[in-house]
Image (tube, rainbow, N blue to C red):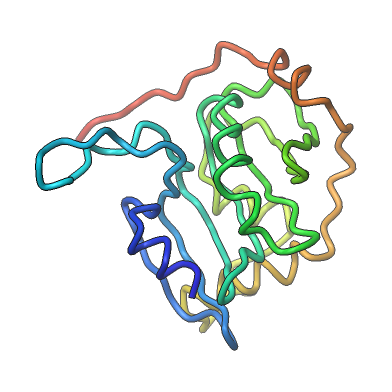
Length: 186
């Protein structure tokens, strides 16, 4: 399975779970590495990643990603996604990214992959994704974690954003100074 390969290659970080989500499908929630950390020692261990997709929600088959959503702090970070993961996306998949510093909703295309971008200076990806698709808690009742991702995937298949297409170079100028506040232990 593709997600197991990602795990072995260190592309998954702060993993919540990888779980069966149907016939030959696995669901993942956690962080997806965009830029690996430097090698930390002679044993080849790495420092934490430089850049990740936070709160990633991924549904993958044996060799292709069927659905992907997550949060990045800066729109420019997605360039790493488009170069590292474009070949792993199944045909017709439109990743949905929540971006802290995006100024507006938009659709962008890079390396043959089209993605929807939604500004999200505050909030959680899972809650926003569920709201966007009109899913209620009752839609997930009695489902395993992997099955919940499959439910989101089923709803996302019929979702059409209607966002205006923006050329990547222009999208990079559609940003704000928004930053997420980091909160420590209370």
